[in-house]
Image: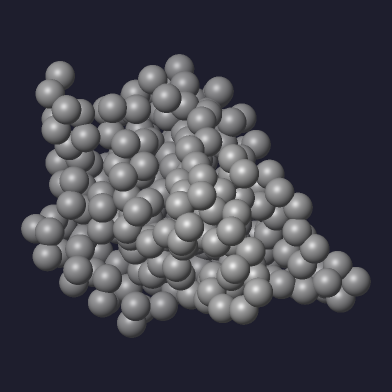
Amino acid sequence: MAAPKMFDLVDNVAIVTGGNGGIGRGIALGLAEAGASIAILARNEEKSCATLKEIEAHGVKAIALKLDVTRRDDLRPAFEEVERKLGPVTILVNNAGVAVSKSVLKYNADDWDRVIETNLNSVFFLSQIAAQSMAQRSGGKIINIASEYSRLGSPSVASYSASKGGLVQLTKSIAIELARKNIQVNAIVPGWITTEMTAPAQSGPFHDEIIMRTPAGRFGEPEELAGAAIFLASHASDFVTGSVVYVDGGYAIR
Protein backbone atom coordinates (compact mmCIF):
# COMPACT_ATOMS: atom_id res chain seq x y z
CA MET A 1 0.00 0.00 0.00
CA ALA A 2 1.43 3.34 -1.05
CA ALA A 3 2.10 5.71 1.84
CA PRO A 4 -0.10 8.58 0.55
CA LYS A 5 -3.07 6.21 0.14
CA MET A 6 -2.68 4.98 3.72
CA PHE A 7 -3.28 8.50 5.02
CA ASP A 8 -5.96 9.47 2.50
CA LEU A 9 -9.19 10.56 4.24
CA VAL A 10 -11.27 11.21 1.13
CA ASP A 11 -14.85 9.89 1.55
CA ASN A 12 -14.56 10.18 5.34
CA VAL A 13 -16.70 12.39 7.56
CA ALA A 14 -15.12 13.76 10.73
CA ILE A 15 -16.70 15.46 13.72
CA VAL A 16 -14.37 17.67 15.75
CA THR A 17 -15.83 19.04 18.98
CA GLY A 18 -14.40 22.41 19.90
CA GLY A 19 -13.04 22.46 16.36
CA ASN A 20 -13.24 26.23 15.93
CA GLY A 21 -10.09 27.19 17.83
CA GLY A 22 -6.78 26.06 19.25
CA ILE A 23 -5.96 22.36 19.00
CA GLY A 24 -9.39 21.50 17.61
CA ARG A 25 -8.98 23.96 14.74
CA GLY A 26 -5.50 22.63 13.98
CA ILE A 27 -6.80 19.07 13.82
CA ALA A 28 -9.89 20.00 11.78
CA LEU A 29 -7.74 21.77 9.18
CA GLY A 30 -5.35 18.81 9.04
CA LEU A 31 -8.14 16.29 8.51
CA ALA A 32 -9.62 18.53 5.81
CA GLU A 33 -6.27 18.77 4.04
CA ALA A 34 -6.19 14.95 4.02
CA GLY A 35 -9.58 14.97 2.28
CA ALA A 36 -12.17 14.44 5.02
CA SER A 37 -15.46 16.31 5.19
CA ILE A 38 -15.59 18.19 8.50
CA ALA A 39 -18.31 19.00 11.02
CA ILE A 40 -17.35 21.47 13.72
CA LEU A 41 -19.43 21.19 16.89
CA ALA A 42 -18.75 24.17 19.15
CA ARG A 43 -20.40 26.95 21.13
CA ASN A 44 -18.96 30.10 19.55
CA GLU A 45 -20.68 30.61 16.20
CA GLU A 46 -18.46 33.50 15.11
CA LYS A 47 -15.28 31.47 15.58
CA SER A 48 -16.90 28.46 13.89
CA CYS A 49 -17.79 30.51 10.80
CA ALA A 50 -14.22 31.78 10.47
CA THR A 51 -12.77 28.27 10.77
CA LEU A 52 -15.39 26.91 8.38
CA LYS A 53 -14.08 29.21 5.63
CA GLU A 54 -10.53 27.96 6.22
CA ILE A 55 -11.69 24.35 6.00
CA GLU A 56 -13.70 24.92 2.83
CA ALA A 57 -10.59 26.39 1.21
CA HIS A 58 -9.28 22.81 1.12
CA GLY A 59 -12.12 21.91 -1.24
CA VAL A 60 -14.01 19.64 1.15
CA LYS A 61 -17.56 19.73 2.46
CA ALA A 62 -17.90 21.30 5.90
CA ILE A 63 -20.57 22.41 8.33
CA ALA A 64 -20.59 24.05 11.75
CA LEU A 65 -23.24 23.38 14.36
CA LYS A 66 -23.67 25.26 17.61
CA LEU A 67 -23.39 22.75 20.43
CA ASP A 68 -22.64 22.79 24.13
CA VAL A 69 -21.38 19.25 24.77
CA THR A 70 -22.57 19.40 28.39
CA ARG A 71 -26.18 19.39 27.16
CA ARG A 72 -26.58 15.64 26.83
CA ASP A 73 -29.98 15.77 25.16
CA ASP A 74 -28.47 17.79 22.30
CA LEU A 75 -25.71 15.32 21.42
CA ARG A 76 -27.69 12.78 19.42
CA PRO A 77 -29.68 15.37 17.42
CA ALA A 78 -26.41 17.13 16.51
CA PHE A 79 -24.79 13.85 15.48
CA GLU A 80 -27.79 12.89 13.37
CA GLU A 81 -27.81 16.30 11.69
CA VAL A 82 -24.17 15.83 10.71
CA GLU A 83 -24.98 12.46 9.16
CA ARG A 84 -27.96 13.92 7.27
CA LYS A 85 -25.86 16.71 5.81
CA LEU A 86 -22.48 15.05 5.24
CA GLY A 87 -23.07 11.29 5.40
CA PRO A 88 -22.06 8.57 7.89
CA VAL A 89 -19.56 9.74 10.48
CA THR A 90 -16.35 7.70 10.31
CA ILE A 91 -14.13 9.85 12.55
CA LEU A 92 -14.92 11.44 15.91
CA VAL A 93 -12.43 13.77 17.58
CA ASN A 94 -13.43 14.53 21.18
CA ASN A 95 -11.52 17.76 21.69
CA ALA A 96 -13.87 20.14 23.55
CA GLY A 97 -12.49 20.91 26.98
CA VAL A 98 -12.46 23.42 29.83
CA ALA A 99 -10.34 23.98 32.91
CA VAL A 100 -10.89 25.63 36.27
CA SER A 101 -7.75 26.81 38.03
CA LYS A 102 -8.51 27.06 41.72
CA SER A 103 -7.32 25.75 45.06
CA VAL A 104 -8.93 22.51 46.20
CA LEU A 105 -10.01 24.42 49.30
CA LYS A 106 -12.03 26.84 47.18
CA TYR A 107 -13.68 24.55 44.62
CA ASN A 108 -17.46 24.47 44.54
CA ALA A 109 -19.74 21.82 43.07
CA ASP A 110 -20.40 23.81 39.90
CA ASP A 111 -16.67 24.20 39.22
CA TRP A 112 -16.14 20.47 39.53
CA ASP A 113 -19.23 19.37 37.62
CA ARG A 114 -18.65 21.69 34.65
CA VAL A 115 -15.16 20.33 34.03
CA ILE A 116 -16.08 16.66 34.48
CA GLU A 117 -19.21 17.02 32.34
CA THR A 118 -17.32 18.75 29.52
CA ASN A 119 -14.06 16.81 29.52
CA LEU A 120 -15.21 13.31 30.43
CA ASN A 121 -18.95 12.67 30.49
CA SER A 122 -19.60 14.25 27.10
CA VAL A 123 -16.83 12.15 25.58
CA PHE A 124 -18.47 8.95 26.78
CA PHE A 125 -21.93 9.84 25.56
CA LEU A 126 -20.85 11.21 22.18
CA SER A 127 -18.52 8.24 21.65
CA GLN A 128 -21.41 5.91 22.46
CA ILE A 129 -23.59 7.60 19.84
CA ALA A 130 -20.78 7.50 17.27
CA ALA A 131 -19.94 3.87 18.00
CA GLN A 132 -23.57 2.83 17.53
CA SER A 133 -23.45 4.38 14.06
CA MET A 134 -19.97 3.13 13.17
CA ALA A 135 -20.79 -0.43 14.25
CA GLN A 136 -23.48 -0.61 11.57
CA ARG A 137 -20.73 -0.21 8.95
CA SER A 138 -18.06 -2.21 10.83
CA GLY A 139 -15.50 0.55 11.10
CA GLY A 140 -14.60 3.92 12.52
CA LYS A 141 -12.08 6.00 14.45
CA ILE A 142 -12.51 7.76 17.79
CA ILE A 143 -9.74 10.11 18.90
CA ASN A 144 -9.77 11.64 22.38
CA ILE A 145 -7.66 14.66 23.28
CA ALA A 146 -6.14 14.08 26.71
CA SER A 147 -3.48 16.05 28.58
CA GLU A 148 -0.11 15.74 30.30
CA TYR A 149 -2.15 16.11 33.50
CA SER A 150 -3.65 12.68 32.82
CA ARG A 151 -0.43 11.34 34.34
CA LEU A 152 0.94 14.29 36.33
CA GLY A 153 -0.49 15.97 39.39
CA SER A 154 -1.20 19.67 39.73
CA PRO A 155 -1.95 21.84 42.76
CA SER A 156 -4.53 24.02 41.01
CA VAL A 157 -6.42 22.02 38.36
CA ALA A 158 -7.66 18.98 40.25
CA SER A 159 -10.88 18.60 38.25
CA TYR A 160 -9.04 18.97 34.93
CA SER A 161 -6.42 16.40 35.91
CA ALA A 162 -9.10 13.98 37.13
CA SER A 163 -11.13 14.40 33.94
CA LYS A 164 -8.15 13.80 31.66
CA GLY A 165 -6.91 10.84 33.70
CA GLY A 166 -10.39 9.37 33.44
CA LEU A 167 -10.39 10.09 29.71
CA VAL A 168 -7.29 7.98 29.15
CA GLN A 169 -8.81 5.05 31.06
CA LEU A 170 -12.08 5.50 29.16
CA THR A 171 -10.12 5.39 25.90
CA LYS A 172 -8.51 2.07 26.85
CA SER A 173 -11.73 0.53 28.12
CA ILE A 174 -13.93 1.29 25.14
CA ALA A 175 -11.08 0.42 22.76
CA ILE A 176 -11.20 -3.15 24.06
CA GLU A 177 -14.93 -3.49 23.57
CA LEU A 178 -15.06 -1.85 20.14
CA ALA A 179 -11.99 -3.55 18.63
CA ARG A 180 -14.01 -6.53 17.32
CA LYS A 181 -16.27 -4.06 15.53
CA ASN A 182 -13.24 -2.58 13.74
CA ILE A 183 -13.54 0.70 15.62
CA GLN A 184 -10.20 2.02 16.84
CA VAL A 185 -10.16 4.28 19.90
CA ASN A 186 -7.00 6.19 20.79
CA ALA A 187 -5.90 9.30 22.67
CA ILE A 188 -3.54 12.13 21.88
CA VAL A 189 -1.71 13.88 24.70
CA PRO A 190 -0.65 17.37 23.63
CA GLY A 191 2.19 19.07 25.38
CA TRP A 192 2.17 22.80 25.97
CA ILE A 193 0.53 24.18 22.85
CA THR A 194 -0.04 27.86 22.04
CA THR A 195 -3.80 28.29 22.60
CA GLU A 196 -6.18 30.56 24.49
CA MET A 197 -6.30 28.01 27.32
CA THR A 198 -2.53 28.07 27.81
CA ALA A 199 -2.22 31.85 27.43
CA PRO A 200 -1.70 32.43 31.19
CA ALA A 201 1.29 30.07 31.12
CA GLN A 202 2.93 31.78 28.16
CA SER A 203 4.52 34.47 30.29
CA GLY A 204 6.20 34.68 33.65
CA PRO A 205 8.14 32.07 35.65
CA PHE A 206 5.89 29.15 34.70
CA HIS A 207 6.70 29.71 31.04
CA ASP A 208 10.41 29.35 31.77
CA GLU A 209 9.82 26.13 33.70
CA ILE A 210 7.87 24.67 30.77
CA ILE A 211 10.58 25.57 28.28
CA MET A 212 13.29 24.09 30.52
CA ARG A 213 11.39 20.82 30.85
CA THR A 214 10.50 20.54 27.14
CA PRO A 215 13.46 19.08 25.19
CA ALA A 216 12.25 20.83 22.03
CA GLY A 217 12.64 24.11 23.93
CA ARG A 218 9.39 25.74 22.86
CA PHE A 219 5.59 25.62 22.94
CA GLY A 220 3.99 23.64 20.14
CA GLU A 221 1.53 25.02 17.59
CA PRO A 222 -2.02 23.65 17.12
CA GLU A 223 -1.23 22.55 13.57
CA GLU A 224 1.44 20.21 14.93
CA LEU A 225 -1.31 17.97 16.33
CA ALA A 226 -2.66 17.34 12.82
CA GLY A 227 -0.15 14.67 11.85
CA ALA A 228 -0.97 12.41 14.79
CA ALA A 229 -4.69 12.95 14.22
CA ILE A 230 -4.45 12.08 10.52
CA PHE A 231 -2.54 8.90 11.39
CA LEU A 232 -5.10 7.83 13.99
CA ALA A 233 -7.98 8.70 11.64
CA SER A 234 -6.57 6.82 8.65
CA HIS A 235 -6.09 3.22 7.53
CA ALA A 236 -2.45 3.55 8.61
CA SER A 237 -3.63 2.97 12.22
CA ASP A 238 -6.08 0.11 11.64
CA PHE A 239 -4.11 -2.12 14.08
CA VAL A 240 -3.59 0.64 16.64
CA THR A 241 -6.16 0.91 19.42
CA GLY A 242 -6.16 1.84 23.09
CA SER A 243 -2.93 3.76 22.57
CA VAL A 244 -1.87 7.12 23.97
CA VAL A 245 0.20 9.20 21.54
CA TYR A 246 2.28 12.04 23.01
CA VAL A 247 2.75 15.16 20.88
CA ASP A 248 4.66 17.26 23.36
CA GLY A 249 8.19 18.02 22.21
CA GLY A 250 9.45 15.45 24.72
CA TYR A 251 7.82 16.98 27.82
CA ALA A 252 6.60 13.62 29.14
CA ILE A 253 9.98 11.90 29.01
CA ARG A 254 11.84 14.43 31.18
